[in-house]
Image (cartoon, rainbow, N blue to C red; front, side, top):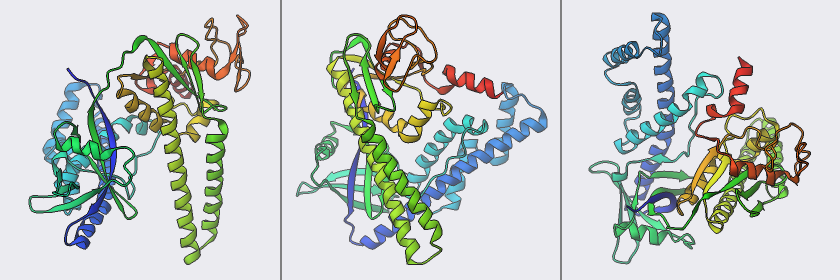
Length: 437
């Protein structure tokens, strides 16, 4: 049976309806209502949880008592007329009646799923309730998007908002360096499939974010080989093979940190100048400059992550490694090195990029426990604080092995068998939590 991976392509859309003004007015209205509705859903789910928790407390019910919890859920359904998840979907349909069902249904599912993943951290005070902002991609159903080709060979997209309400677009490919035209052609021919897409309005441009399912390339891989990825200070990413001498440093401190620090410094200066400007055109001009520099920083980091992720996957393919291992860095702000990396690196997007690029060639990506990976000797396994002398030098106190510090950490990551799927499984997190209690 053929294996598939999913990658998201970005297609620019041009409205081709006769009444373009009305079409754009409708698109902007959906865009403005969607982010407000998303916040309504998140706060509604939080309200539901708080209500149920208060009931548990008032009636002195143990949340682990399955029978008692089931009774509370049934009482909740009787009172509200629906399950907890469905209450917010019903609410946003009443609060935002102009949002089409093809948007409200998947929007509720996406926000509720995100809320469920983050709920535990919110209850423990490690994060606040997620907020959604204007310009966020608007999720729509798969069946609401229809592709077609006209007599001139141009590709069109129809967004079916309702039975009688459609908005028609033409896809603008530009230079098409990523060959998106071929991907859409394969969809029209039934060779490729896609999942629920998103519509994003960015300034005056409109994009279709399309998750495309593509067959996985068959490459002969060695299951005994793994690639370890260490994110560091002197070197943004250091990769090493679990067996053999193959290794590589990707990027430099100047590439990543100097550029980003400069941008952050400019951002702080603009923020101070905006604060001192009370009103008028001066404030408006400075605010636009602040938005522009933030967008530049965001694009720089995204491009750099694409570069890093491509180099990591290419290294794994070249050495036929079946697995790529990365540290689970979420929740490790207390560690000096990891805190610095997390502050100045979009780690999760990088991990996501590596994962979907690796899946194209059948390489598995896993997270490992980062506990002591930089302070343990990769030769003899001895751990002792202070063995990592600097950002670049590691000297083992037991076997006196001298090795490049980032290479040592990357080897430990590549050889580690302590795979984790969530931060609660990590040793550092457990110790940190125990110390706070």
